[in-house]
Image (cartoon, rainbow over all chains, first blue to last red; front, side, top):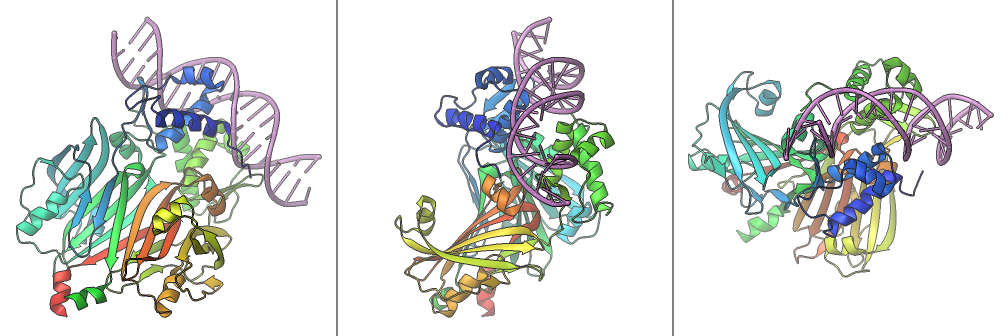
Length: 247
Length: 247
DNA sequence: GAGTGGTCTAGACCACGAG
DNA sequence: TCGTGGTCTAGACCACTCA
């Protein structure tokens, strides 16, 4: 097993240091790949492998026809589902813009499995795309079955992950008895890579969440896709015995 | 934006279908890269990009000097931290071997931050490496501060994620008051890629878990690294109000 | 149109693994 | 030793962006 770094890893390391030290500031354009070839005395495929690494770490954005740019560092989104406060919250930087789009769709195969409803059930879909500056950094789709009364949600939100929808549900009298979050890691799909301006080799945190009312019906489901370098999920469990004794 | 698949994606699709249909069975060797070049009429870098995709999906294992092999499909590990049953469990296939190695280490920078102890504090480290057949598929490191009494754990375990350690702690009288799990997605490090037989482009689920006793001291911390295609984390929240009323 | 990144090719050399 | 995959090169063509 080769222990010393190969060439492209070495080039990536050097560029990472330059970015870390601010020699290449946020939104700066990196030298063109041709310039990097001469700077490091390497061929283009080698240079591009190094850039792949930085892209997958979320350090650069590649723009076909324009150049490679240092990505604006983003605060990490924390997805939490705290058992005591009984609601799902996300902490996030204040300077986040989240436009919301709403439409009615019919359940496809994956959605009807997730929600436990028949195919072609009508669902209200809320799509949240959050941006920090000009770069997108999260994608959230929330689904509410048409039978469930859903109050209107704002057109722009302070929460990137669609917490408004659950808030609107509870404020309109819908009780949430149980919530299950399923978290996986995977690489971005081609479509996600486009909308999130990341590479197909970038890891994302994939969160599927369903909320049930006391009767066991699904009243809300969420599909969250978060680039790995800008997200984490935190779950805290308090001992139930201790809580009950305190009560 | 180019919508049609590029060449290497197309080759990966065809090979994926062959694997899915069983034309290439588990543990079979794929045609050599030279053979794939002629089969698809592509150059070697293009063929290798296609193989990269399959490797990152967990479908093949690459063995330098030997060939590329179809990976044995594995059952997905589910990491759960259920509030009501108050312990951390993992469901996993029965046919899993988990050798355990134990030693005493001193806390480095990241460990003393995680555990909230001074640097160079002595810790007992349990390393769990789980295998299905000959291929490894999870890596777990559990740390218990030397001050905390830890009963011995078996040399081989049925649980790939080190649940034995928590069980040993509670059975020796240590109370666990709160547990926090922090979940992130990222690409495998070079070292993890070697031990887990995956590529450095493969996504992994990274779980950091700390458990506190009633006094707020950390009595156990776990670092879990799970290949994305073989793992998920599931958290269920039940409404506390409803639980208290039922009690 | 000029410059950029995205893709692909043909060929080379090296490191590893198994007979 | 020989076939395998791991790395790197030099060059080409195309697609995209922007002046």
